[in-house]
Image (tube, rainbow, N blue to C red; front, side, top):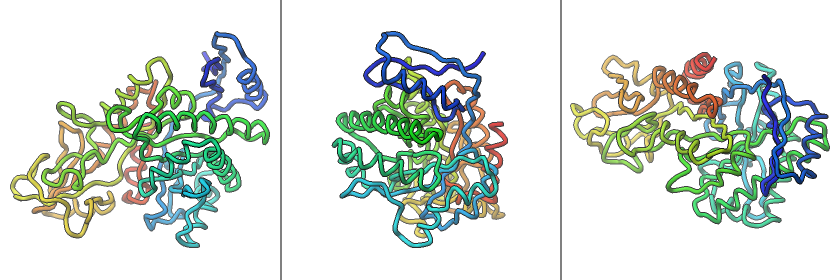
Length: 401
């Protein structure tokens, strides 16, 4: 039996042709017309024989020093180009102007990564951890600001051959900001649909990075997210770092934990529960990095051991790429452990202790994610420049199948 595309009447009208499904242009136009004119209380369903593509994604970070030309795109179905800037005055989206070299890599991102894999889809990611969340809040709060953001993002993506857009607003933290995000996503999706109808192109993908859980610190319009985004990129890592837990070693990307500690599994379950009857699509974040602590006593080296912050050479937050971790772990005196409670790895040598995901942890997370394929449709890696000779990228792609 084929899958179904649906169009339902309601305040947040959904055009049920997710861009990750290959639908014909006549069908898209028909659904679009119905979405604008349908006034029945029922939900219309359209069968399609399209198969949803698993998402095997990776982010390229423009601040990593790792060139786009070095990406082995054969391991990915989707690649994110991170991060475009949001102008705080005009609320338009622009490529970063840090250097001519960086600008060129944004301009040629799609054509560069498609040299090794002509089928890979590219998305332009906007914002990121170094952006100002208040600028995103101000943009989303006013119709004219949203319009400038939306139109410039679509134009920038189309002009430079991206296949989609990714919002990285870290994070909406109040109920008004959550409501404004919902309005933004509604208007953004409508504009994407209108652009596709007018141009004859496939609609741009629309995704967003989100906190590991919709509960607690940050606020999300979950029902709108379910209806308007193709999927969410779940930031299932950096729960504990030397910055927020300087006195104790912790597993920064635990899959499971004892009690109420943050974990990938609990976050996924919370998103699914909050979605209720809406269909949510989740892409699990895999960290190609870890965090390093300094042990107080080198003989006390388990998870939760006393620590004194990050090593001096990894200030301020102790972040270290998997490529460097692999080199560290290969030392004769280093010991690598798989922690069965958190289902992640740590490695230590003398007083240096690092929490990270190695091959076993990555394999385990993908196996667990595949058990929830109704909601989990793939994974993404942050970031590809941290991999070690593509070993984790290759493993993840093979494990997902």
